[in-house]
Length: 183
Length: 362
Image (cartoon, rainbow over all chains, first blue to last red; front, side, top):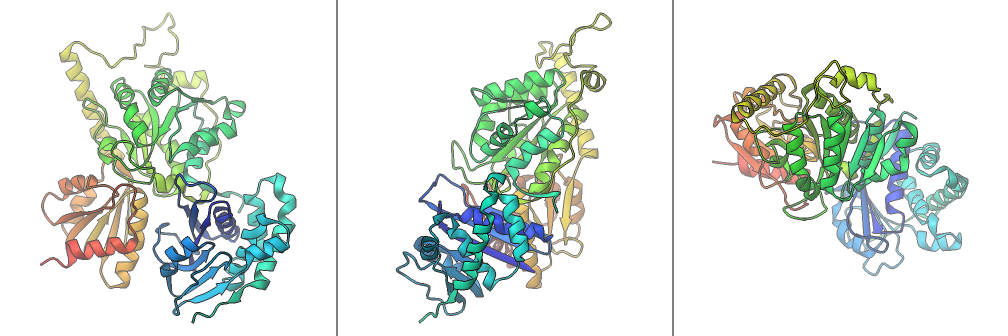
């Protein structure tokens, strides 16, 4: 099993930390992982993306141009990465703020209203965990128990009391993700 | 699983330094390697092992602090990225000229000049051909994974002390910024004064005792005849390194018609390119030099007898390709492919370049 993922959105949305939690979850179940961020002078509000690979065997290139799954959290990233999904692959996006929706018919497209749901749950910071839940529903490559272990490893101990809230958010994402039909 | 951690290459350099018993780190921040000093400052090793961590006023100050620490037989290091490494070159040639061990980490970014902060491999010439003035070489290690960022810190110090020669870890923004799973080394204590006396007592300035002469650390000899003798001594040292310290990895080379030669992050991209070629039925292998100096010349000479061509893949305008050509010595075609200025080639780009430059050539 090898899963090649790009997560892309605005800086501050938790793109990099979602990738980190996913990578840690892979380590918890003995997989090889890589996490390669775009780095640059951008800060909060700029664009951020990270390539995450989980595999049962040695990972070759941490830099890719095609992905099994694209997790897209803003318009710029959708415009940039929709074409980078492998045929038959998966694209998950949050429709909030999106005016030009995905058009490809050779991939599976899903929506997760994570922004709206995070607002309902009154915590903007769990936005990325809702998105992670949506991904795990579609690609259950890591077990929930290993995601929780991954959260423990990647969050500093002072934030460990927030793990149940994060778990709740992941479950919400699993619940609300829905297929989007491209016309 | 607790023994594995998910860490950035840069963070791992810092952690490995503490764990291998490093005595001092002296640096000045620059992207994309600032996490090295940041991690050290967070870890506060001075409270744990007594290791000194100091942000100098400039790169030049930092390398001269390394010069001073190394003179005393201490395990000392610095790190920077390309423009900062250029600033350090005067100090580095003095350290090589004084035959002192130390570790220098270069997390390369695109140049020339201030260039870009994105990854590149355009400092190959500077790293392996000397860098500063005079006839000297560094021992150059090229990590291709976060695990090797850990492993090569201890190895770099080991080789530096074995040969009394500065060693360099030539990394880049990809390996420095990427997180992978890593098993960190076990803690080794810093050397005691007695141990330093035993290891480097014949030359280090550890304080003169009545039973020995002064130890003078210098790279100056106004007597040309003596300087020439010293230069020959260095040449002999480099020859010994070439015989004993060459390290490389081969992947799928046994039946290969074409060989990709790539180090560091490019070698990772090429690994995927090898898989893509094999899926297409093209027999391609990868030679990954781990030591860039001494260079794995012999294995390339051997391969040149049976393959149809070599493609040197580097994020530079073509630097390592010269060493591949010297080894191949005209027997088969040697081509170069690279992206520049901080752009990173994809595995598909490499396959396309191989087809265009070597396979589909009439």
